[in-house]
Length: 375
Image 1 (cartoon, rainbow, N blue to C red):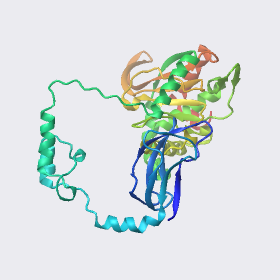
Image 2 (cartoon, helix red, strand yellow):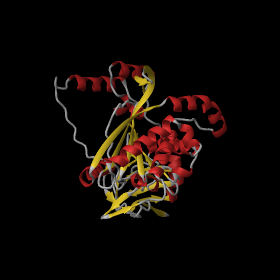
Image 3 (cartoon, rainbow, N blue to C red):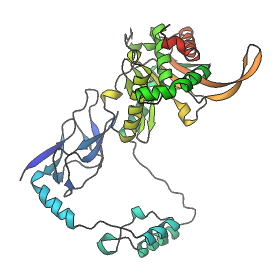
Image 4 (cartoon, rainbow, N blue to C red):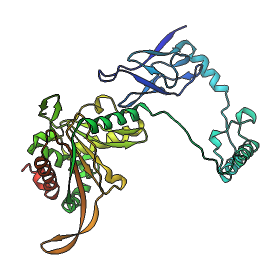
């Protein structure tokens, strides 16, 4: 017998413990090398824990929902049983459902995937579907159901940090509007050539990141943070980009954004977005940051007051771009307008600086050539 331990990955210094969200295998199941065994959730990210070797999951030491520490042993794999498990798999017949029964389940609005088949080899039968439908019909009319579920560790941490931000900072928000037509025109003119050369679509996010860096360079206090009675000025620009996913809000960091091209930024944002959906962002990618950008416009938001991500001192809120009537040179014209919001820590950032910072972002977006030409 050859037994190997399944251990929790090495967590970062800022993460003291994690939670086992859900095992994807049960004791006795065959596992393949590289196959995800369990999701491990910290207050920053959900990690997948793959099997180091093929074999059989001989024992689960820590179950769903249990707290675990770095490098703690949570299961055992018997690698000598790999051949036996493969042979067993070859003769097993998986549960199935015929097309006619599948159609019946659809017509009766019954979730066939949730049923346990009583037919041969676990096959779901017509009687299984009708039985499930009968149970639904017998449920009390007008019942007011409630379901209590614990917050995930990520959701708990989001709640803690937002409350911490509200309690420990003097948050104020200033607003402005920006005409997005120059950026739209520039994008439309070069998007095809840009994608052909760089292999990535030219979106609007990179323009907002570049505009933020431009304004931060002009107003370093907005890029600073508070540490006790000290103000820490950061000589680098690590921009957090808020991404909403089914697992919760995450803010991966674009490091040294001032040194990156539009293409570099677009690649990083696309990569972050894809991996946020599958929980494959690393703890290091979610740690740090000197300034953040939150784009509620992708969900249709017209205006909001974003909350600072501590220990940062400010955050930019972007909203939906809509055509609106505006006055230019005494004439009413239609322009694609976007309302911008900057929430800032009034302890170290004065209103004058915050307003001028937001005006600098507006200028960078309405005259994008200034940023691209480093003027």
